[in-house]
Length: 552
Image (cartoon, rainbow, N blue to C red; front, side, top):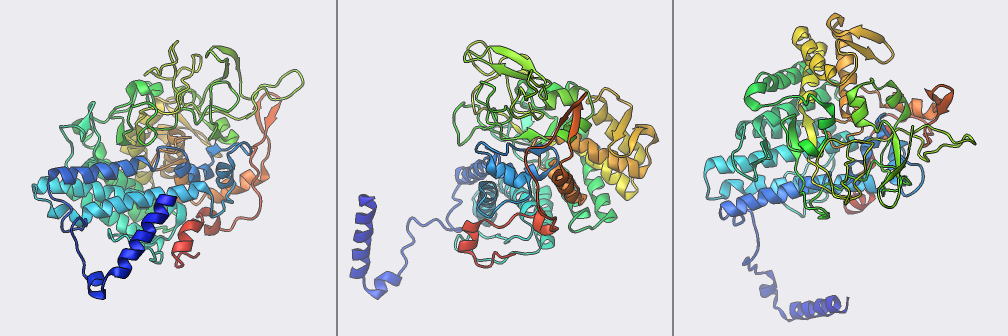
């Protein structure tokens, strides 16, 4: 601190010694401006690397994803240090909630990094192909960031310039934000190739950089969001979504996309790099490098089980109860809860709802436990790169190189199925897409249960039933995986069903989870539903202090 004060005094003295002319005359040496930033290929590549580092930080830990706890798949510990999660789960987050602040800060950091590339890439003395690749990454990830933010905060300041002094912009409407998102994705689709051949753009058999087909899949998700709440553009936009999804599906063989036959491999570190994913975010496998690694290995294990779990996300009870039985459910949720001693030995295995002789819960959380990010360890405690097995020792490291599956091919198939059904499209192909996803996930491969409606043969579904079945199937596919571009909360928002979740949680009726055993949610939901005020989060107080135009 003394050093900073001393330097401040020296600078003040120097300024006083200057004449007015000296003070007002700019000396640009060393100043990075749009006109001198991109001097070569290395500078262009470095700007893209910096962009991807910002992208990593939108998901590296759980804070930025806390808004997804509003969905009916995820809940939180009402105590411990999880109040930020619980506030969002209960639709009552204050404007200083660390989750909403992190979501805003980290996604706007992506936007600012993208803006620099968009403003300068064309000045780089490199080929047009190289310029386009860099620009395509920037347009895509700027759209991605705004797509996340607009579904969480609603109206937003549209920052499209690298001018760091532009901090007082008034929010634009949700429709204006979506216009920018669509324009950015359209630009990216026209700039990007369908594949890459060298690292870091491609590695381990996958495209790490964004491709044209990734943009098309994302446009399908965006058009679906625009078709539903709050813009309610309806049939026309569902048709556009189906067209974009089908453009990817029609070239499945060329692109190499597939579904994991064994659902345990979907999130497995044993098959971390795969073309079951259309869009992914790479994380460094360097254990312990917090700025680059995925910090999620311990986030779903409950606290108090002996292996250092954080317990950030719990499974909601009703959603788990309705979840179709089969390989997918056994991979998404831990079939049993295991306790470990200090040496990593499992000494107790129970059902999550089990009670002791006095009728008290054996597992303090008394909720379903997600197993999505959990990995096993060998006898020395080292991470095993294989499908997770709940009966084996758990890895206690907090970070690893899990590749976040932002958009999976199964989602593209389901987006087509739902959008085609809602827009009068090809139901035959739509049913085939739904079947492909469903049959490897559930014990009943030919029939599907729509909560609240009943069980139906997939081949016999009418358009309305098919749309609803695909909507639910997508919810099962992404349950608990807040890294998805379209989470369960996103789907519920599009269908304007977050209020239903709010009212259900407010009533908090006990659910029978085993014969004679009834369990309620732990986080209390109170108050009245206030429409958009309940859906959208407040702007962070730190931003409102800087920008008085940020008022709702």
